[in-house]
Length: 487
Ligand SMILES: Cc1cc2nc3c(=O)[nH]c(=O)nc-3n(C[C@H](O)[C@H](O)[C@H](O)COP(=O)(O)OP(=O)(O)OC[C@H]3O[C@@H](n4cnc5c(N)ncnc54)[C@H](O)[C@@H]3O)c2cc1C
Image 1 (spheres, rainbow, N blue to C red):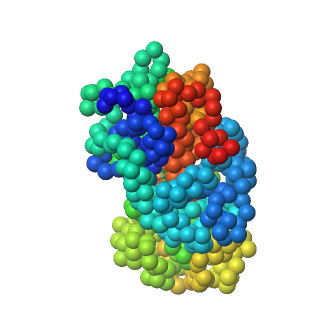
Image 2: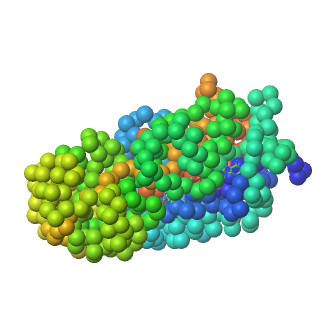
Image 3: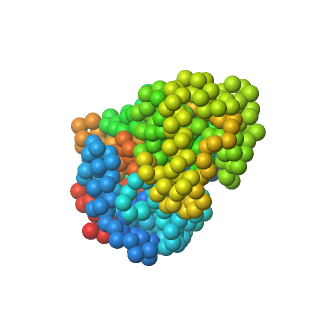
């Protein structure tokens, strides 16, 4: 090895890139990682670190029996079987072993029930029948710290503040990258540059659904999410998949900050549609909630009363009582002394709104929501006190829409070795991808909290192993996915 001839170069130092770098180095590869920003971590560092996996020691510690097979079935069903089963299968097989690998590196996930994405332990990730949401201590920041320590211990070099400009391609093979106008040669390259949520042109082209957020759209992905993977993919004629998919969280139109309850309203509020009717469990996982909201003709509203405005639970900065009054004064949040009047300004049938609120008042404030089963999701979140009835005027209505853009799913298509495929479906020699950059696993439906971090770290780990094997001159016909899963 010489300094300008590395075994593996990794583009991007978020979750996928760090996992790839550590796993390649574990194979004895010399690894150089480029990060465009002044610190490592990307969106992974901003995340709750929630990690979906099946058959783990954490689940076993809680007496939960689970298998990759069940995870796979659930994943495919939720995605209408439009993803490639072999690739998803490899992911589901490897998510559990990757979680154990992380625990071995120092990530702490206690075997205890967790009520939310900020309490270390095991929580309900989405709409799975057994809980698969693994919440690590110190969240995404904790994951990045552990991986960064592991990469330092394994001698992975990092070049910060340096955005890789292009791949070096010779005779159809990837043989390095260009950064700071300097060519750096490598036997294999891993693209782990994240998604494109911060690149408006790419969002318009590949995830226009995000624009349903209109003026309320806010992007929480890390600033480095510029979509460079698509530019690199173009250089080698890579296939692109996952167009039109990503994760938008439902929010009240005035929300601007990501917080740990993102995607859910504070208690004692209900959602109604353009017919003035309640239509969903307001605490439903965003595995399904955005789709349900988007399916409502005439949009959706959050309805609440004066008591709810004033008695705000902790952690909902955007919903502060005085903020709501500012929104009312601006005319954007609606207010009326009676539900019938409120229905009038919302332009929904008054009888339906009154019936929806009456039905709510007789149900969940008394402990059960027979219509939408919200009592079950609230209980899973450790919520013990019943929500209040909506019965104290004035009453309020605010537009609800998917407006928080978290991550994007369109990227260069990969196979189960994390090898990038060209438009004929063949692997591109010397090129691997993972995380939001490497597409095919994050699908039509986000399978619940933990889907994207699990994808980034699991496929990053596989990409690193595959890249190290390529550097050793081994064929990728030996499945890296099967090796990491211990199969
Ligand atoms: C606020 C928030 C909360 C979230 N919570 C969760 C959660 O709890 N669970 C979950 O599963 N998912 C969550 N997600 C989504 C998840 O965090 C991401 O999808 C996942 O971490 C992406 O990992 P990645 O490695 O692909 O990208 P990133 O972690 O974004 O890393 C990509 C890195 O590449 C760098 N880069 C980009 N271009 C270049 C270039 N040309 N050269 C060099 N470097 C480059 C970027 O700066 C960045 O550091 C959350 C996302 C956000 C924003």
